[in-house]
Length: 242
Image 1: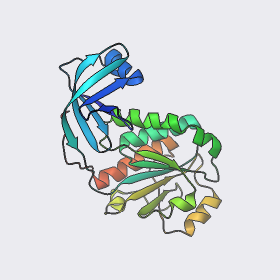
Image 2 (image 1 turned 90 degrees about the horizontal axis):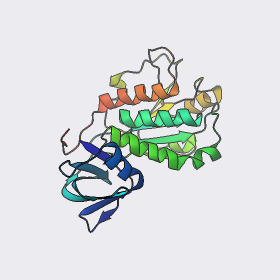
Image 3 (image 1 turned 120 degrees about the horizontal axis):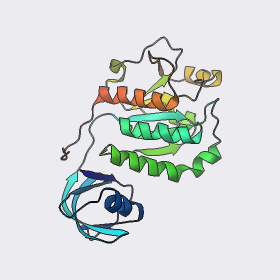
Image 4 (image 1 turned 60 degrees about the vertical axis):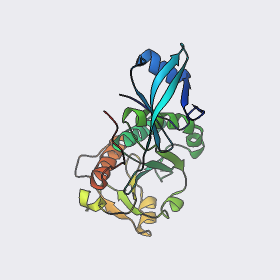
């Protein structure tokens, strides 16, 4: 099965999908798609089941055969991650998408080592990573990413869980069950500083700790999202062929 999740889709007359550049290279050079092989495109709540009808070295056309309306049911899981060194942030986001996160919020913690100005300049690259990871993991929901202050994020409705290695409360599946959206706060290397903890003490958050050796940020994101998604489940209206 070939599956591509796209933030933008070139849909012609509601029946033809055209691809070029990186998508064409991936489909024709890497996957070597043929006319008898279905290709699924996900965009804006719809999965388009298509067949190849024409291709050149750098472009391709796919005819839409079936449209699958997709609706996610259940609480969403968001990762609130402190700004860290850029390459590691990319890996953390990629891991979070593949584990099932619905979106990411980036903020500056007291120990963050990535300036906010540098963060904003890199957003296009990280959105490409989200597309790639969503395609690889066959996501039926395209995560998004935003950068904002922690005082704004904390006011979003839902349950906010702060992962802090010195907490006495172990992270458990039962902690994440319920109907509310989840916001999983992950700190930078060295964890949250005293300034961050003082901020959290004034807000209605719960704390949790992994009962593991200390994890790198990238691995902590995978662990936290996987645990939360296992608790809330993942249900859609359709099941696509594997």
